[in-house]
Length: 435
Image (cartoon, rainbow, N blue to C red; front, side, top):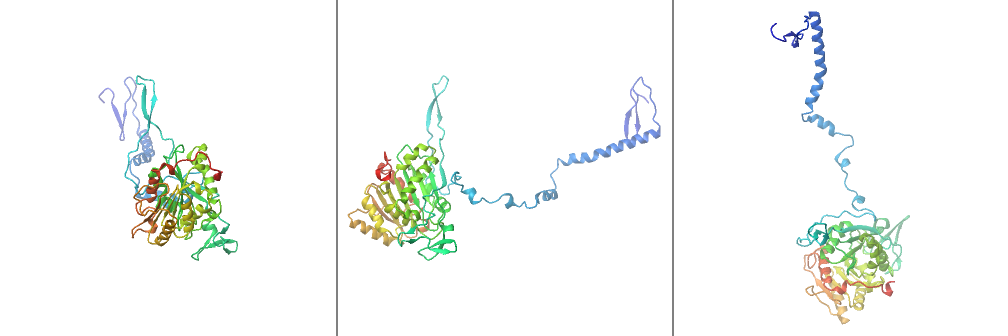
């Protein structure tokens, strides 16, 4: 061999010869073969590991994906269940997630950011920064014992028990249409939809809006989502809060429940003061809500609790306005009496051809009492205004809360009302009748 450090070969491996100054020894054949077998065994150990390392850099096979995706009892519906009722509409101690507005009630407006000077340690004496929002808009459901139902008293028209049907221990009510509705299904919901707009300020003159829904309705599906009553109140810009009690649940029935009782509406308003103060975030505001003026809005079958609340509710002197949406189906004497006795409030009734005869009859009753009646909404809404508005043919009764003589009539009437400070001026102290 030639070179400073010659190598000798064993099979396919090269091994260095002895270093300079050391003695080299040739390996016999019987030593070479064991060494070769030794290296082959070592290679066999490392081959599976190399395959694993290489596999880490590759996409998994279709078979592997199929095997991993087929878990017992692990379907899409089981992994991602649909929201349940309690998920969407929590208890009285929780608030509803604010829904996305589905209908634009007004063109987008640029929000005005209030600013206030803040002193900083710098060459400039002040730095203007946006004032953080102190509270958020809130729409929630609150259980109130003074709400319309459950009700175990009499129907004042017949003086007979309201629950006039029995089936064993089950109680129900036969409606005027002849259909039987069971108490535990239709007349057992004491929740109230409460809405406090983000801009509401209890330190300023404001108003409580009470909305009585019509037949076949629920607070969530109809009052909130379809009729957009909370949204219309917010978009009106009026300093107002909303109370909408659940009446007969999804039923063709206009029963007033506890609002039939003398003082029933007053108990409802009194109880709401503490709930509104808690939701508003200031317990001291309960006194403000306890004296705040009231506007009652009745849609369709909501005429019945509206009329009885005006007649026997106990706080008719606090009611600054009544707005009926295709709702004069009866109780004309109660509406006429309130209008005659409360000349500082306003009364508006918009109607379709279905309620036209009753609206015309009520107009004649009022004119007979010397009360001026206006038949359009073109003018301002002043204390003492009595307005009847007929809507064109083709307007559906079902859509009337969002489409009457104008789009979003609740927003329209409240905006007109806000132009007259007398409607929203707060009382400085409870009147004797309200103590």
